[in-house]
Length: 51
Picture 1 (cartoon, rainbow, N blue to C red):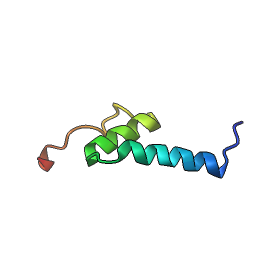
Picture 2: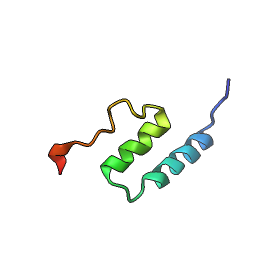
Picture 3: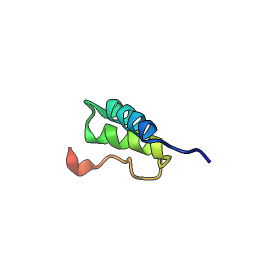
Picture 4: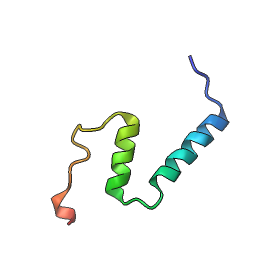
């Protein structure tokens, strides 16, 4: 089992925050879906009412 340290969490969170900087909410949703493995399960569909 891998033991995470506070520093590894800080590095991971900084990497995530940098990856979503300047993106809109749909792009951020896709980034999070890819990271968590919940990609292509319906969460990332376009919401036509937002346009």
